[in-house]
Image (tube, rainbow, N blue to C red; front, side):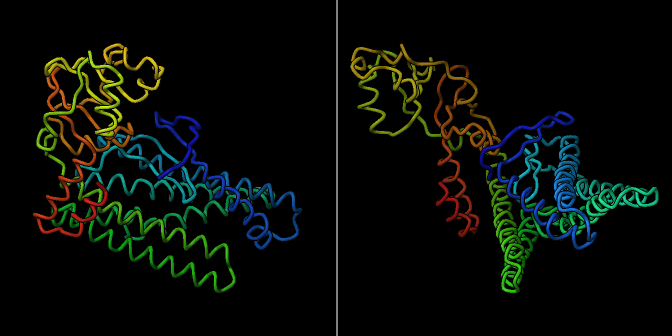
Length: 387
């Protein structure tokens, strides 16, 4: 979802990161405020004043989004959901949760926390504008805080649209989940609304562009595409959770695993295993006892002329938790571990012995078959394509 990110600071133990696409948003906001909004609401000020006000408005947007997402993150963490951090990007910000809410109540509390924070920020900014005007503060001071009060009010209204994955969509999902007791059904309803809302924003963007506001039109168009894509992705994530949660890795793993002996030469490893199986990691075993792992990076460190006389045991490394998993591990817990590590193959070990290998392809193949058996052929096809 994100490109290169910069970690700015930690707040309440949560990392605040900046995706480089945020620079585009900051530039657009600063420019639109400096040449459009503030000259319209407060004419006859110096151009340098307008640009300063625009920059402060963009900074206020940054703070507003951080506080909004921080409220989500703190409440989610209190309810037992792991938080990987907060990332600000071109379409706003997101609190990156390691797991989904476990109950409708946890979903509601986490979802409503952001809008409540934005309401508080809007009220404080409005109070600052009113007090500043009453105390004779200059127009720039009053204008910036009045803008931030308006901005946060708009954020609340937009985010409370009952379209997943917006906050209002999560609130609606919590209510439907509590009513019917089915997270997948509740997500399907709210994601459908989210997809329709995304299409509406795309149409709004096209009409805005045709009406002469090209930049505004492009902005709404892109936001619509993002909302629609995020709604569909959210529903698929819930289906993945439904399909994998409670399923032990041993039911999905491949056994016996393709493994190599420590006395095998690097040349034989490349010729008989790498070129045949195309894996980037191989377990090294003595019998069924796991003694290490060998990766392509390890092979590349050995000069080619020494491959024939160098044993795998001489270049192997210990297999750490980053590539191993127990046979009773929940398959749903393994998938985010794969995504976070970038490792698509995990060794299934028990008591120091190799029991099998499970891959991302195995997980999605299992989901595909399960969905087809349960009458969800379309999702089964999508999972097969993903695998």
